[in-house]
Picture 1 (cartoon, rainbow, N blue to C red):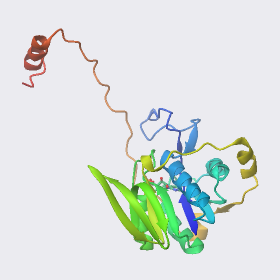
Picture 2: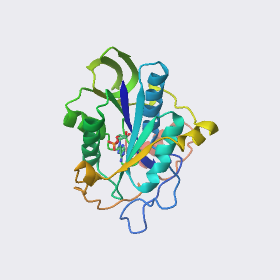
Picture 3: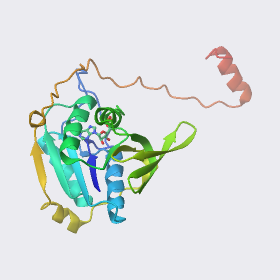
Picture 4: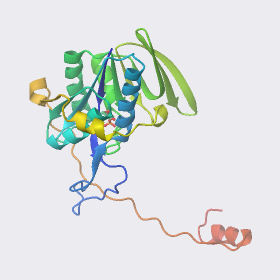
Length: 249
Ligand code: AMP
């Protein structure tokens, strides 16, 4: 079985991103970049399936700039077998990503594509679903448990107020939720070994995909700052303030 894992390069989740002074977008220059956390979970799940003997090959792919090689090398150090960089300096939208992934699915014919449920930069939560539609593959999104048996995947999904279990015929799309697993760290010997693993580079043009933007970012600004709270002396004081100052009761 072959697994394709799309991973996205994003600003590290520990970094507080600020808008550019002119509000034309987020300021991302010189910030620490990492693999999107949900993609790390997707990589970990693919590796666990390989460790169980269910998967022979894991391919990581990213659509992004030259520097995204760093994130692919990290994925290779974690246990991915080979990587593909689809090189573009455009901050591609989910539909363009899904179209590139569709072309790669046609070339690589994976049995399973495991994506993150969302990228923490755009919070789109669209790519897996769009790829499912383009490939006409069944999909199990927001997965908190995945089991493979024969040519079927059973996915436990996190839905509002509970869990839903679906059975999918392979090839299929799975998107990882937070509780699917806890990703491992790459060991130093594996980081060294990863330097020798294959990393191919393609362009969207070679895949026949137009990645030009279809939406225009108009403005980015921080949410208004919250006013400081006040400490009330007792319930009487609280009721007084709610009635006379906040006018909510
Ligand atoms: P999104 O739909 O943008 O929230 O992203 C959901 C998932 O799609 C991510 O967790 C990745 O697995 C995948 N994805 C999104 N953008 C890219 C990209 N540029 N390169 C590779 N995978 C991506």
